Length: 425
Ligand SMILES: *Cc1c(COP(=O)(O)O)cnc(C)c1O
Image (tube, rainbow, N blue to C red; front, side):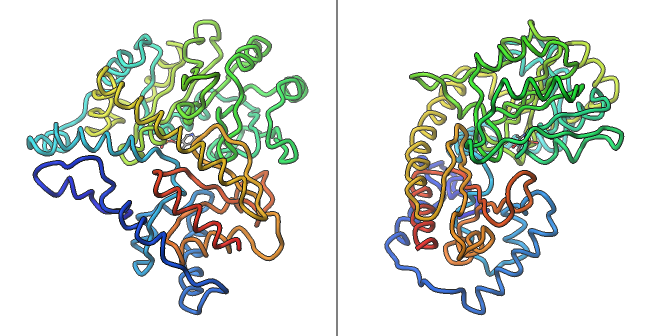
């Protein structure tokens, strides 16, 4: 269950891969029939408190731990709001247990300062096979996004809509934000020709692309993106956020194509990457950016000396080991395989349009008038303990109609599907 320490971490000897009993619980409850019809007074009360929390959280959702703390009666079973690979989290926990917790080394990670920014950048450079001078390590990608918008962006910023809200919220007050609206009629498809025209017309100094995009999962193929970068050499700052790239495969296999390999050719390019989603470790706050050495230096001159943590440093240590990498690749491919089946099943839900996705989540549009997105989200959470994301606050999406659902473990996905089918019946 959400927020519980896997049994493995409590016992002395780690057991085989297991989601702390939640998989078994889910299987048992898949067979029970949940009451249909309108919410009871008690359920309504829970739903109202949930909506209050959501309003207080602004343009982000309250985290699962916040909800559990504020509404303890709620039994949250599956967090399909947070967009992470749960198998990768297990992999990290396994290593943390064996190498840090069991041998009694946790104290060192918590009591002492982590290494300085440049030392951690050097470890990451090994893992990524990139020069250290090009790497900027952040306390999560969000710190880097803020740093770039504050340090490099000038008077005009171009952002696609819908988007990840910090890209416009963190702009400096003297930066004007203009939008390139992706249309739901085109499944939020990104049209390169149209985009280049917008750039020529608006003349932004900074452009932002999230690939695959959050919240719709739309993807710009690597070759197309490189061709576009060739055209846009005169734009001073191009930020590409690859936080969901590990889920986006091109061609037959499961390979993904990062722009970090093309950086030599484009001095205006900055590639931002969060480790929170694909490695399922948002709590340790680890992210990085790859950019020109001059830009890295400019940021470091403003601070960021000890902006990592002991746990993040341990993660980057692990990440630079080939055997960890190989294990992670297996988890990644396993997760993508069953996520694809899940997304396919979502397209068969009644009264709902599931947008095509290359990420680990899907955007759903309710195409019916008897239910709002908020109703659906509340119903799923209160009745089934499934936490999803209403997108009412997302600029560029019609309020009341959109929800975003993350793919979880295979058994959790079956449970989510079942919950959705029930709620939409
Ligand atoms: C979640 C998210 C981030 C932030 O990641 P952190 O590393 O947790 O700060 C950045 N970009 C996008 C597109 C995201 O969805």
